[in-house]
Image (cartoon, rainbow, N blue to C red):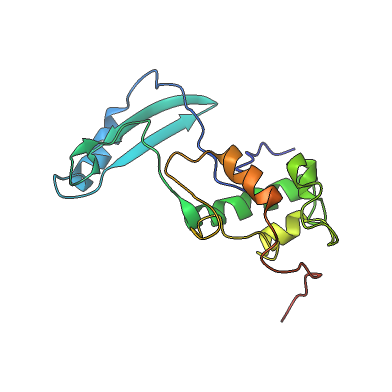
Length: 172
């Protein structure tokens, strides 16, 4: 079975141990892109299960000149959808679950989501037809920079569906 990483259906920020070494070649590759008036970046290089390089470059905030560090948090939002979809496809290919798997197998809080409707399944999340409301809609949820994934999941599990779930239909 191919070794795959489960990115998750929600963007998760994972703690990565400090790098045992820095790779000067990475510093050299990054240097031309970092300036006093450009946003910074954080670079993580792994290999064979070990952190090879982990460093922050430039500024996390151009106004305050706060430095970018390996601990800087990024709000990835929709950028994570492609990675999550790819990870789900790989896990489906590895027969770890399928599109009809109920998400309550992974997130028990969703066992009773949308009472009276069919359960939310992996395919609903992949095709964006789950009915889950937008947690970034400030009229529904008070999302803050320090809101945890656990808080979002707990809120989503008890929130009313934004729309009913119907069987997924494929269009050609």
